[in-house]
Length: 422
Image 1 (cartoon, one colour):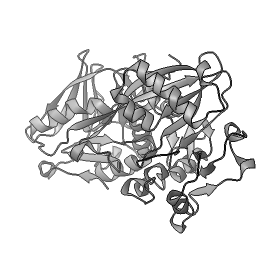
Image 2: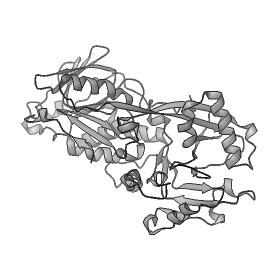
Image 3: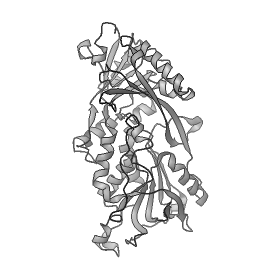
Image 4: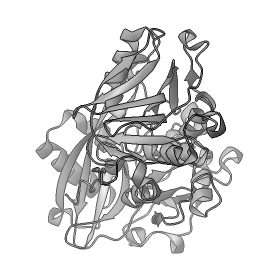
């Protein structure tokens, strides 16, 4: 588990809380950041007796979550060097964790979330060699399955395809649906506002957050799950005396969205001719504004494309698609690009973190899931790191006050629109 604590937290005690005037709210926990991670934590904490609220400055999921591909994967794409890695094993159990929630048997009820693909694929246009032997090994039994041609996705049922297709036991979610399901039961615990500063006591514990409109949010504990927005509060915690508060790193991507009149649904990694432990292309399928289907493409195309401008990235995309799916006329495709930043705690040489990360600084938790799949793991870490909820019987406030929500009629943040639909 990637959780640390501050020696300044010794002796920190949970306080009783009271609901105060409209301009100041007192809570057990204030969460900053309304992406998938923040909304997951809001549900998790309220279900366990915390009186928690979430503050989001723009739209729910608008920074990173809605720009993700919705993949809940078990780490095989991190093992393309023909060896299991820390990253591949840290995430191996995540698809089953999510499936449990989707069936209504997990820690959060996700039965209403739209699952757009119950399996994922990996294809190569030629023989796999050493990697093929690795996929067939005992170490990956039950995680990778070679398919017969009759079971291929439709796009590969073409006489020009003479390669291999494997099935991964991963799944893909409609991210907007996920955010809507997580937000729906928490509407009265959502606050629209930008946290611009933090206030500390003499023990370097955070007392309150001040919003841009002057409102103040006071709480016993604060959880920051704001992605790149965490950096402001990392700095504030350092200045308050928590020297171990990590810095934030950004790992950029230059993703691509492809529309074509003859696309069929595809959820797959291309590993044709790869020279590194990374898929050449990672493709998911989504509705387009015109009612058709589009392919959202990441993988090495997106990581290497950071150094390319839009026009060159589009040209390279067309070249890659012609090389890996040559039986489709890609000259007729409409291609657009999207730049996004993945926010994570800083790693040596900017490396990708293997796990979700929670760092405790007094009564504040800095959180990064690092990838959508690991959100449930982040929840585990937060529950292990956070102080217990206030016992209502020990509080001066009544049960009605403890159950109260944010001001009636106040503005609530709404779920963002997918960037390819905007």
